[in-house]
Amino acid sequence: MSERQHVHPHPHHAHFSSSPEPGAKRRREDGGDDRNPTECIYPVKLKPGLRPGTGVDMAKRIEQLEERIQGYEARLAAQEAGLASVTQWRAEVTSSLALPTPSASAGIAPPSFPFELAPTPAVALTTISPAPSAGSFLDPLVLPPDDIVRDLIALYFSHIAPWAPILPPQQTFNAPWSIVVYAIVVVSLRLSTDPRIAGTKQQLRAAAKSHVLSHAIESTSIASVQALALLALDLIGSEQGPSSWGILALLTRSAVHLGLVTEDEGAGQATRVPNNLSRTSIIPPAHDWREDEARRRLFWLIFSLDRYACASTGWDFALPDFDIRRRLPCSDEIWAGGQWHSAPLFKPVLHRDAHPDPAALSPMAYLVEALDLLGRSHSLQSRVIEANDAREVEHRKDMVMTLTSAAKRWFADVPLAQMTPGPMPLVIAGVYHATLLKLNAYYAYPALSNGSPIEPYGGTCTSSAHALVQLVQQARDVGFRQASSPLFIWSAWVAARVLFINAFLAHQAQPDDDFEVILQALREMAAYWSLANQYVKLLERAKRKWAAGTTHTDPDANPSLPDAIHVLLDLRRTAYSAVGATDATPYVSPPDVNLSHLPAWAVQPLLGDLHNWFDLPAGLFADQ
Image 1 (cartoon, helix red, strand yellow):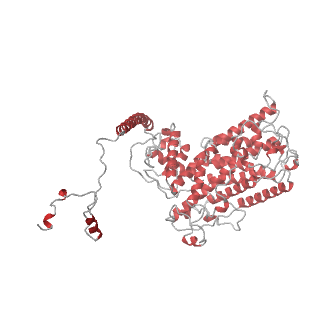
Image 2 (spheres, rainbow, N blue to C red; image 1 turned 90 degrees about the vertical axis):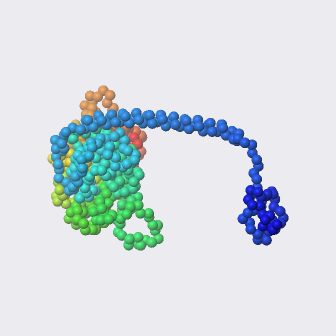
Image 3 (cartoon, rainbow, N blue to C red; image 1 turned 30 degrees about the horizontal axis):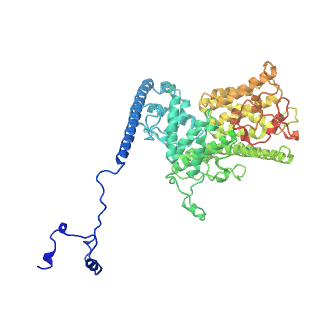
């Protein structure tokens, strides 16, 4: 038999030893075929069955799964019960909102505004839900019916956009509504007189606001920042104090984050400073002129809100001057066109050498400059100086005069007469006069005077206070529904405060008629912007305390001046620190200072030792 006949016919019949034969090993080393190795490894034989403890582990896992299933069932039952209650609540609200009341009969006349509302197909009646859907930024359950939304958009463009013009004039809106429309609803609900939503305004506002915030946190876009800016307008005009102004911090940081602080001059700018780090671009360049100008105006609104917030709270700027390189907003006619336009770069009033052409500028440019002057007065007054340092005190007064003169020259060139009558010229003039009052009122009544204002500070205060009274009367003629705004309300508060000081230190029996005019105007504006409520309460309380201290009819009257008047007389208090002041007024031993360097209320009888607060930082009382 040949060698081939000795080969086993099937591999199962082969016999393999646990170690190869020496010959086999040598054959592999000699280059033999190694595809069928002759060495096998057998594992150690284990006992049949599961490992010890495996059954216990499996039982524990089954118990855990059963507990989870029970928990899911309980949660599902709770959600079904909640859904049933929401369905019932929606049905009740739908029945209350589904009134056959057209927009015209709701007292909302169709105003004229420079944009077109695109018609939308008829949709099912939608109502507010307790919370926006987590799965969609275009949740139709958050907003009221579409016809009401269109009315609110019209109210925004008629009454708010004139002094906050950040949306393109040709922009159209249709359902499903964009995130900007949700913000428009939030800020415009205060102006609506529609009876269909009279009882649900707060719920609508809360749901739409929550929806905008969710979108802004999860989405980075110009539209989300526009919506945040409108939310900030609503917030500063409400009675919520600065502790709730986190939206402003998010807004200003978003402006920096998206590169809105500087102009996008094209690719050539990137080669100017090649050694700088290349910043990550979050959003693409504007695709046309209208979008470019919309971004520019959005930044200037954020700038304006930042300056107002700092002046009324004592905070530091979130957008420092040296970081800003932006062109001024152009006129609405140029914005409406399709041609690219380069307006002058913004320069502080104190540093510019020529006046820009007013025909090419939006009135918003003058509001920006007015708020820049206000910001500079805030920065000046925030610097700490020693009361005993007569040289530094005089230097401060010289700076006040320099800034006052620059502001007066600037205001003389503002073409207010050429602007459309309405809220914008009122706001510009109001901020200007409030800036002069903020600068000069602190020095108008020195400690060693007989109560008469010291010139030129006193004359500036008197003229600006009376000018603001006239502006308030003009706003009443226009209608506070259209002419009022948080900036204008703050300006009126500053004037009322100085009028109160003037009357008290002149030893009058009560505030004069101009004070009462502003106080009544604030009451009326509070119907639209509840911020005015805070100032009304403070001014009325001060009046009552003054009257009680003068007539001595109050058996519990304190021999010192009541705290409510302290708040008004201490011009180092900002608007919100005055509102949030406690009843307790700190009294300390007065230092040995030259009284001629102090304001009158520092040493007046009944005023306590207020001169200890001389030139402390403006935000000192923010936590009270």
